[in-house]
View 1 (tube, rainbow, N blue to C red):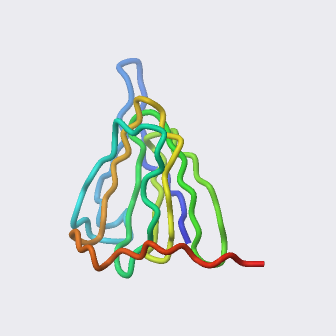
View 2 (cartoon, rainbow, N blue to C red):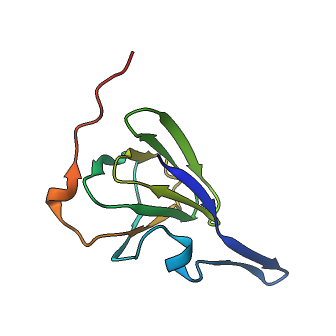
Length: 127
């Protein structure tokens, strides 16, 4: 099931600093890949889940919404603060949408890219 963790954030008159320190202890996986999504039009991104990959998504600028279905529960997460980190487990079929014009979504992944790890079919509708 997808869940939010809150990152350490320091704020003073000079600005803000959000820390992903000791990622091995904070994230439930070792980081093997990093990518970021930006300049998104009105399209949705994602639309898949994984066999193996766990991800951590942070909207470091602007905002976006992540819709998630883990096969049992459907949920929306608004990522609108760079100290919010959304953990997506392999079973989490997710799509991202509603990107603000200035949004930058950075994603840390537990695996390197492998096209055979992706499952594009959503879970069947439940009563």
